Image (cartoon, rainbow, N blue to C red; front, side):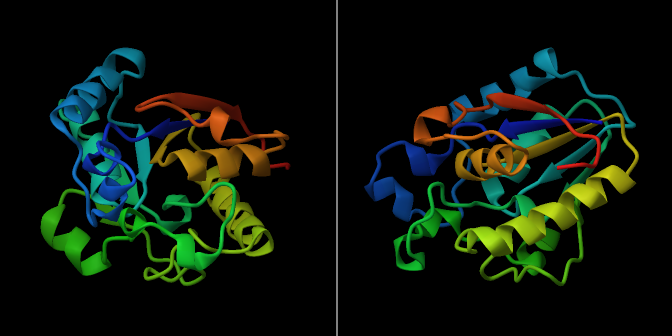
Length: 194
């Protein structure tokens, strides 16, 4: 199966760091909306496609603008929520990476589905999990992706999260220099074996 990881469009939280990293529940910017809509040129969607998104406003908005002309399924899943890379103490987590509650998602984005998972708390997500804890979550998540039986699957997430999954899938010596740009993509061929 082919898994296409896509970083969300430009968000308000990236406009004036480090101060803007304190913005909670950041929207995508006007530029981010243009970037999200342009994804359709690179990755045209059809009704059979599935987009899995992080429980943040900017990732959900990116997926919705990208899929605006096609009714495909969008599932919010905390296993692709924000994740620090490299790992730092939990006290260094940014407010912009706080997850939306399930209730907030249901109210603000009724057109998406929420995956009910018990192994990840919606308050913490995967942002500050140890490598061992993240690996267990990533293994479960990848198994779930395989069970979906899609030839290609899209995941809209965050730079640190995507880099963490790339490392999980076997890449090594990754640094922040390997982060994707806004709406950048990484394609992984995955056959269920790590």
